[in-house]
Length: 295
Image (cartoon, rainbow, N blue to C red):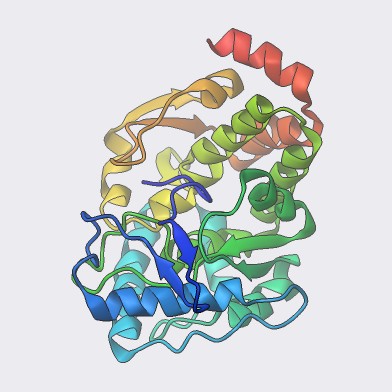
């Protein structure tokens, strides 16, 4: 439903030092002044964060904790059926709290001993090269706000449920964490914007919306599917195509609806061999040839 680091609501700093998050009129929280004030305050936490210091604490409300508790409970039921074994293993290892929203610093402290990853707070738009590049260093940019309480199973933009339930559970498994790092290394290695976009699209169709054959069943490992209450029920009925770098890197997608084209890995080893090796070795020349093939 969204591409990481590109589709956050715009943020502006005011002359008085305050921060304003510009929500679209169609956003569920647009007409809720309390929610908008919360979004502004939480964005300000990230803007004021300094590298190397603890992530500022977001003082969540009881209502916000209730949204987290409801969604994580319902998603856990669906994960038991639809998520890959490695994702479920990562979730068990990480042990996210179920009754409250964890602070990003807390998630980092749980995650770092497992795979070395830590979180960084994001107020809004993070440039693509920065967002993907720091994955190579074991950092993941994340929002801290949570979706509007009126639609707990929907968000038009990545929130803490997507960033933590979707991504952190995957980042807690060493093999998935290695793939994130390889994507980060690729983003730093390529020079052109077209090549960077290609790397990001491969990320989109794998670590965001990837599916995998496991014990004869189609399972999901992509964070975008596994954090979406509705999409997780629908992905098996989509147009499932073989894992193909040229196709993934050049296929257009629409962030405003469920992804109707998905690419299937035959196994985690297959994903590592095809996508992991690509990220570990790609350069602008190789990507240019793949683009020509895909187009």
